[in-house]
Image 1 (cartoon, helix red, strand yellow):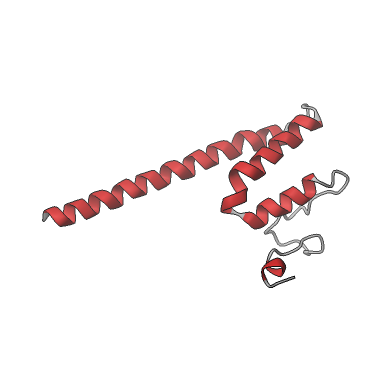
Image 2 (cartoon, rainbow, N blue to C red):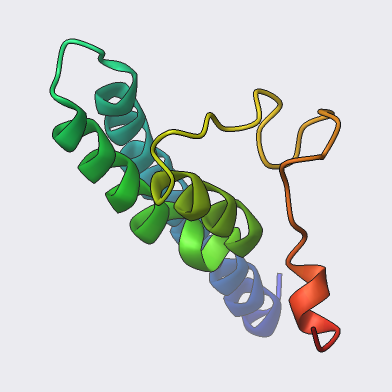
Length: 105
């Protein structure tokens, strides 16, 4: 095996391992925050704060449409989110697509 090929494979392996670490860390941040959100024994202020942190830390840069969906529902406490979620198969009547903004709305 030539030295050049060895260095290429080493770099690819290192990048792969770094990527796995980032994914695991993001999943680790999401799970405790969702656990707080689903714990109905906690006060609503703690639950909303956990959901807000989840939107900002996990979804904002990786899934902006999902972040926008959840942020809209956090700002409207009397309105229930679509049970199908932001990308589910609901009727879509309560969702707005971020694509409308990108097209110059």
